[in-house]
Image 1: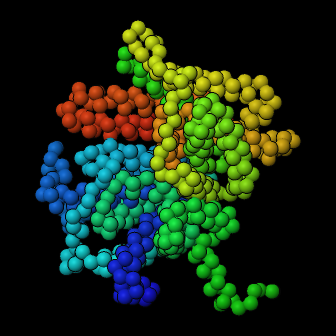
Image 2: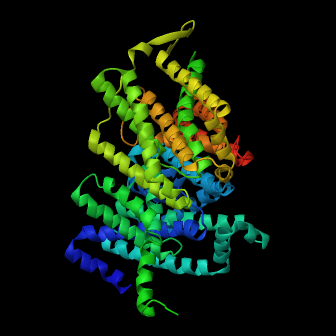
Image 3: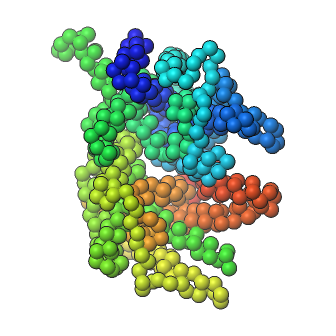
Length: 323
Length: 303
């Protein structure tokens, strides 16, 4: 834990701004993945549309920041909404809009199960992708370039290091709150729904409503990470919502260990680092990543976090049990 | 007139989607496997045909080579990878086939480079045809619709008149039962998968002259294919046909006429912008409506 706080100074000495920026990206995607874990790991619902929420959050920040920088308005009709670069406004807005989309699509998607659910979440994410591509006012497929990062009172937002710390604080906050949520009654109901839906319903729980809340929470979290991402990269485009991004976030969840909240963050680190590492050797790194992914799915099981816990627990137990 | 042209375009898109969806819905229904890599076989079909046509000079030769290649490749993938996924949960299946997409896409880029390939419309179905006095329509697109009708007929005969077809239909309804009844499940699965990839490859070959042949072309049609399957019902080829034609028509007609409809209500500039954007969402809204009324699709296989 202390390691994470010390990371930037160490990283800047080693690799310069690039490593700090990479670390920030890992934290941001880790946040999105941890949110997805609520749905996938704890809820047992495989969603292939999570990138849509990231995109909404990113676009919310992007649109308002652009309007602020250009001194134009976001909307002139029916009411005038000016742009803003205030992070205290844009980030909650990102969360709120993503949550709203999550609510609307969740109501529709959660009526389905299994394969249908996967395909519908995918379809809605792509719908949003195509929508933003054809929306010329917001840049279409070229996207929006952010001139400045959002302002947080009293902080220099242009520094990658400060952004890193902001993301770190937010992520830790989420992991803490999220941990409380999954250990609460609400969390147990969600897990019960995953294990045996009919029994949970027989016990009197309106599983559907619990799942919807879970879905919206995950959506809001993804929206927040999207907002942070927009600030981090300074660029927003429909590609953020492409379903291959949804797939990547899903990969992070599985790679790191689903149903653990922390696992997906490790998974995010693993995937992004692997991409960077492989990219150094060949521009066709995806040829290698594909089979690696396959191997992990076919032969791995608990993800990296599970592996880590397995090792540490074995140390505590000493030898394997013989009793 | 424009409406007839667009309807035909919609039917043509519907036919392509049907080819993609028919095989995939069977894989979903019988093997209960989510296969995201189906689009890759569409792409492989297109690339193979394009390459053979470029070097051999004949579209038919390209077609004749591409179909077996995609079918055999599909069966190989089934044997090596998909078999291990049948008992796994959906997340594993999604991610494994996702890995396959990465692999195939990048492999294509390595072998053929990033520039898209181009296929010419074969000369024996080139040019236009006058379907109504004064209305010309490309013969090639009509040919695609024709192929679609033939394939639908072929599948109908396969399913209703042959033993294999009967086994497939039974498998879509209750696969454990057919195993208990002594059908060679493994072989059946491989054949079904091969059939699916063959159809996908056929769609890819036919799409070659109309769309650009490039890595990643499978993904865009795959999304629509999923929408088709969700609308039609998993495991149902009839549903795939209905869904495909509906989606093809809604998407094409939506894109063609929604901006005009908008223009009736709001200013031209806004209408063009929002019209195009909403038109791109039309199919998904349509899907949402269908699902609201029938959560398991129009013709679910076992219900």
